[in-house]
Image (tube, rainbow over all chains, first blue to last red; front, side, top):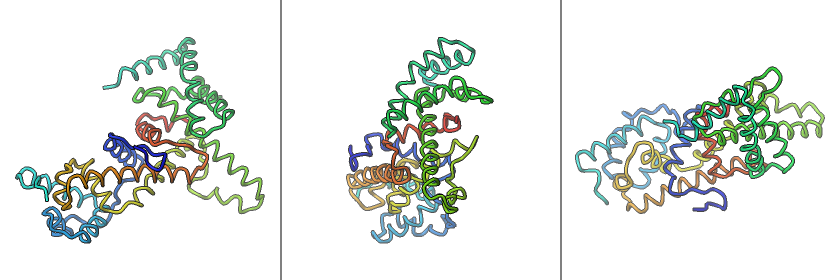
Amino acid sequence: MQVQGRAVVGKGMGNDFLIISEFLARTGAEVVGRGDAHASDLKEELEEFVAGNCTEKEKAALCEKLRDDPAGLAWLAAKVKERREDGAGEKLP
Amino acid sequence: MMASQHLQDLDLVEQMLGGCETAMELIRERHGKSLENYLRRSGATATDAEDMAQQVITDCLMGRPGKEALLRKYTGRSSLEAWLKTVALNAWIDRQRRASRTVSLDASGGEEAFGWLGETDAPAQGDQQDISLIRLMRSALKAAFEARPGWEVVMLQLHHLHGLSQRELAAIWGWHETKVSRALSNAMESIASDTLDAVKKADPWLELRWEDFLELAGNLEAGAFKAI
């Protein structure tokens, strides 16, 4: 797969992401920042997000907060996995 | 578990460090030309590539006065070829940056020409010399990530780092699974492309491909960045 004639990202793009994430973590940078927000501050919004109830605008705004909030992102992932175990997370819209 | 290739490489290096001249010649023969080709592909002129490859091989095999052979830092965690490439590219970037700054200094001649000395990316010396390549890669990646909208960064992380399936992402985003799949691919392609653009902007003479970038990033553990 060719991107702008130079960058080539193929089937291993997941691996690409892991390699660069690991690189950033080991060199003192991270994919996400270390914002002051806490998962608890966003809990209600995250629950709405997990339930698939957010508008496009709300999702975009929430994700801008989450990119600086690793704890919030981890909480969101855990919540989706909980629903997976309950059998509620795999439904398609 | 270490790949068998790396164990063979490590064995060869240990033989060389033990004084085996055959091992030394084997490393020189096996990797000298490939390093030269790699540097040429990375943007070096034929003369620079040949000169730099020979210098790196010599430094790796024999060291310099007062400095041990760089290969003493090789641990076998990556292939010897990948390790040497990282050492060579880092050395070449340092050389190019020093050269361009010297030209700039000579051309302007005034006090302003010393401005770079106070910058964080001033050419490092001695043990600090290793960081040019890391700094370049890190800043290029950070710029690429910062250019992406939050939802792309979040979606990539939820999928690749937290293990959520595309189906699960589709459910919470309210999208069809194929749209999520496309979004993930496009985001990763943009990051790759923007990263290489940022590298090019910082060092226009450097020709780095995405697979080279990944190989270098994956070699961090190998200590090659710290070799020179």
